[in-house]
Image (cartoon, rainbow, N blue to C red; front, side, top):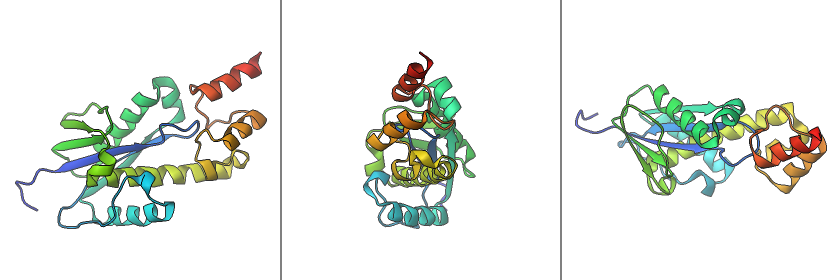
Length: 195
């Protein structure tokens, strides 16, 4: 590896919109000598393709790390701050320190290195695409685990997003420990049951 080459890390999160489960973030430093074909915004890929690419990213990247912020942290901080916290944790877990961090979206976590937000970075910058894939696969795995604990909500299908089926399950069964109390549909349900 050339000592002159700047190590650039891509960062993205998964799970800001759902009503349940942690928010995940990943940080990836790709090896320019090991190109990974097919990197794209994780939302544009099938679950099977994401899983194949995730294994390849983990095998080929110079460094990668995944972190999360819990439902309790989301409710205490708000989803944006919890997402930034998960991002910071992911970067700090990297085995190799990057010189520059490129983050998908509009907001950057606080880090003691150069950080830049890139709108639609998950579709245009390979390292951010790789991070989006790792974060999405890790979060989906977490939601499958939560489904095994709480099968009545269908987390295996909607991954916690506010689908009609999820909202019906919430009204039928109430909220479980995995639900984000600060999110409006969950909060409204809990308040209606307190009356």
